[in-house]
Length: 350
Ligand code: ADP
Ligand code: MG
Image 1 (cartoon, rainbow, N blue to C red):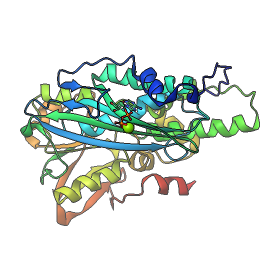
Image 2 (tube, rainbow, N blue to C red):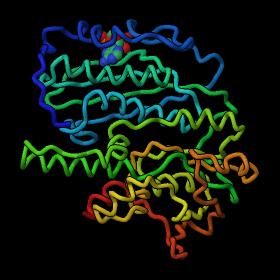
Image 3 (cartoon, rainbow, N blue to C red):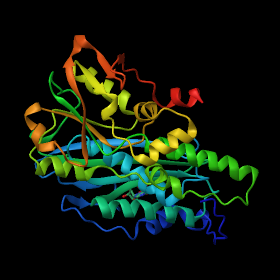
């Protein structure tokens, strides 16, 4: 982090647009049979093989969604893909192709974009998706990245937000809150560095939470696990904005209420330590932090035996009638309404 390596710089204007696109995409291979035509024509061609197509897109803007002073470009490329694949998996679909569009200012040399594309390529190879197109343009300032992901599923396999029923169990994958606290640590170290550029930050005690912020993984494995266990969620959403806000989306779409148990929310021990250090409540962070990219879903009670004891899955509550409202049952056994405070509210609190 904060390395200022003296790298060689190749100006983007030396290459021209086509040279640049060629250079950046030359190492990408096609992995999916469904990719009929990738980069190089007016449009890509995808064979959906009779399945339904899911499409999702996200736009990331420098200074709004990422800070290049602590986000390495390779990680940024990787994360930009993860954010989109996570949305495909939240539909219980298989991600198959992506397009990547970038707007770059001439402050970036070719070597910077090579790093970005190295991260995109790593994501493509690990998640078995093809880069099949995009667009390249200049910006007056900063970097913008837009990724669109395509995926397919058999029509009966797709899971939407609106299928939760009274009595269903609420389940989450992985653990929550780490990515937000990873960002807090990185921002703190950035301030320290500004005052003393020779300071050597010891980030070892924060390795897990920083990794969750800089290199999140989309939960393809959970979609595969559920399929193997023969569990089809009744509703599903991915956690990008924080647990509360996603629970509210599920319940409003499904016209239900919920009881969420504070003591069941999965937290990593490192996150708990960092929350103590920052004197911030770990439940608040899990509820409102966001960028976890875990899957939140509901299952029929009959499927409880199948998910019980699985180390990747935690039952955190259950669905109730809409008239009961959406409530958090605290460790002190009091019931408080779940509100979406999200990212901004958390920031204001400090
Ligand atoms: P057009 O002028 O028809 O929009 P472009 O010259 O922008 O075509 O793109 C040529 C080809 O390169 C297309 O297949 C396009 O999808 C692909 N492409 C353009 N920019 C990128 C990029 N940043 N990443 C990946 N593929 C890209
Ligand atoms: Mg174009």
